[in-house]
Image: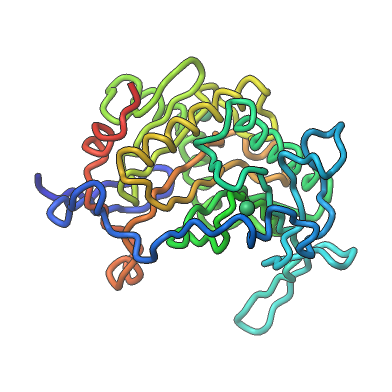
Length: 333
Ligand SMILES: [Zn+2]
Ligand SMILES: [Zn+2]
């Protein structure tokens, strides 16, 4: 197949799909660091509070003492950003430069079992992770100083995880970050022009073409994006137009968590258990009425090629796998 430059309509970026660079599915760009299963006895997340971690913001089950925790959300011991003082972030100019003070929150979400990653959790445990995200998200809205909350998982050293024990992160920022800002801009342009949501229109086309759908059930769709920047990327959407993650019903979260488990299981099975990242994209928490045009979703990125000179110099990622081919491999029947 010939290469194609595909335009990503929600981010405004070009992607170069270049199959000549393609490799076998389990060698699609190589995790370079070997993932090791670290022993439970030295794991700092078995008894986090005994390892100098702070008391959690909350834990599940909520009616049991902390020793009985199955999931806990706690402040990161090594936060990238923190909210030590009472003030919200402030900005100032320094000649040509702009600085905003780094006021935010950086939390870790832990599930109890050392060996059970998201795809191994029971349906109820998998739902609990999203319910805990949602609960903490609402607390961070109440903080009043935050503009955006990023929720994600890094799994494996190539995906940025330094500890083996399954954990997830919640990072609240006093600004709207770059990628989200770009995607908000493009979805707003579409909304102004067509009076419709760009993501709803994409979902409609995916349902009609059926070429990139990996998983579908009532209310949920998972597909390989037409212009995916990474090989084997999968996006999971509620079909219903929902701009705000925090407004999702338990019913929606239950079905999203089921889809996420199945998608991650398919990635592990078909791609030889790669490291991966997944993250939630949702509308910012400030100026809430302003982002009706957005549509929250989860993006799953199996870890592969490292960005090199061409990608860094142009912002154009090279994806060696046609999204339609990736779909054939990952499809859940
Ligand atoms: Zn552990
Ligand atoms: Zn929509």
